[in-house]
Image (cartoon, rainbow, N blue to C red; front, top):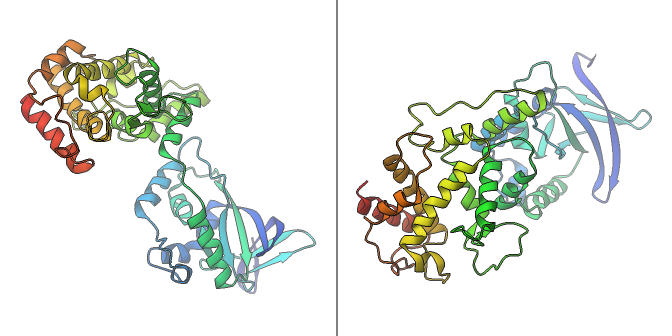
Length: 378
């Protein structure tokens, strides 16, 4: 940091890249410095800026996304591999072509964020004092509003998000334990096992199954189990990842009294690192479902909702009630026979799981769940 004319300036090594839209400068900046020079623009993002007005694309700062990233940056393996894109005026930044450096005025309103606003806002929660979180930045100097709009619109319309099922599938390659990896493993086992009620019913990424039989996405399957394992899967994953890296033995905390009726699978997950108990529990429950409604569970037709998302999610909501009713303690792997006896109370005909009665979506699954619970007298 240097002081000139009573103002502070930051000098950074950088690379100059020439592209059709103009020159851009790539550098590495510490998170605290990045937050400072972008502070005013990030605050402005909570409303609307001229680039959003120009392009017509709404891209306001999401408080929930900011909080999500704020938690992420403190994970043991947090990373931002992609560049944060800024636009700056030549009044506040200059490039020295001889020594390949950028000199930037260290002030809170010198940079406009074209991409990366949520990452910058989230970095305000970075807690590891003494350890820098460095970010790659791409800086455009004196970029016209029209060109800012082109870059902004390209980023927000051309890039496609990673599918949730792909994200879930990638946990297969993780070496450390996590709720995500466990649920992914259960999905694969139940999809592959011939005796499983989910045999070839889950749309597992990369598998060349009979797609006509696949009625439930991997993401839907995973998240409806994970909700009973963890309130914060990333925090749990971070504990196991930290153990792997630093030879630790810490385990996530068990559910407290308040959460115990929601996190019904947490103790089994923490205590049984083979995941056999959780897998067997899911098999037992859905074999009982299959036994009760063989036609609707096994038949794939457009009008049938039981073996699709509507039915699966409703059944997973009822799963919690069934477990709380049948188990004697949190370690119990409830038998298929016990679930079968419970389902005997429910007088819903095997051919009645139609889209007319249970409209696909939140309304239909809510109706089905309430009917299951009422008829089971839980």
